[in-house]
Structure formats: structure tokens, C-alpha cells
Image (cartoon, rainbow, N blue to C red; front, side, top):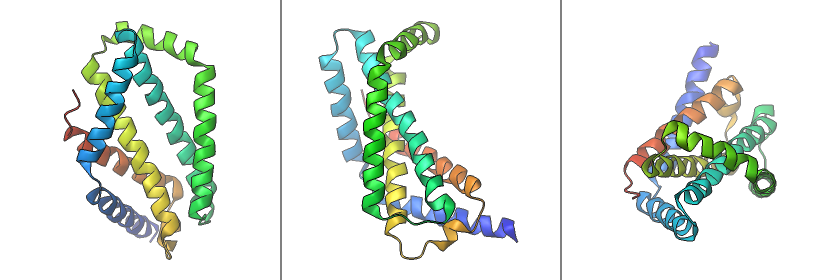
Length: 187
């Protein structure tokens, strides 16, 4: 019985993600991401500085994923449906804290990045793709969260194993981000 319940939750998530991505404007995402990349490239003093700027943004998105997971567990994971404005305020507060923390550790991060650039022979194409992918994932996660706060009846999201539900949401986010970014011409 529980397996059937989780399957229903998974279908609900699949339907929601399909609706969210169906409405997404890939060209607009591409345009915004390209502008951000060009701004970082134009303001960088060299290739390493350019890569650092992209990597710091990727780090920001990774930290936001952890905040999103925490917000999901603290609300929906406990059977609570937060108000949209409360989630937006909490997300903004998390984002400000994350920016501050990254800013404080910027030297440590860039030292780590520099060793990775050489060891992994990082290319502009690879780092730009990772940046775009992390950016789209970030948008999809928070769009999904906001969508849930706007629904009148989302009791089915509570009926399965919540950790499995989070894993499924994350899988769909990764899948649709990959599909979106693979349609883009970023360089």
C-alpha cells in the first residue's frame, strides 16, 4: 500500500514539474544566462578570475539547494503548508546569509578552485554549462516550492515518505535542468 502511495506522490511531482517546465521560456533563460556570463567575462581581469566568478555563483546555487532542502523539510516535511510570502521571505534571508558566507570564505574557495582548474583541465565550455545548469536547477527548485504554497489541496505530497519525495523532486529538477540547458547555445 505504501509503495502505491509513493507512486501517486511521484506522479503528482512529475505532473507539476512538467507543467512548470512547459511554461518555461528557454530562450529567456538562455538570454539571462548569456548576459550574466558576458558580464562576468567582461569584468574579469583574466580567465582565472572569470572562472572564479562563475564558480562562486555555482557555489551560491549549491548552498541554496541545501537551504531549499531545509525549507522543504521544515515545512512540507512536517505536514505544514507555508504561506507564499513566508517562503519568499525565508528564501531571501537564506540567500543573503549564503552570499555573506561565500564572501567571507572567498579566498578559501578560490584557492580550491585554482587547484581544480589545473588538475581537471577545466574548459570555459564545461564551467559555463555547470553555471547554467546550477542556475536553472535553482530556479526550478524555488518555482516548485512556490507552486506548492499556492495549491489548495496538496495533501498527496504528505502521504509518501518525505525523504523519497525530496529525492524524486531533485531528480526531476536535474532532468529538466539538463533538458533546458542542452537546448541553449551559451558560447
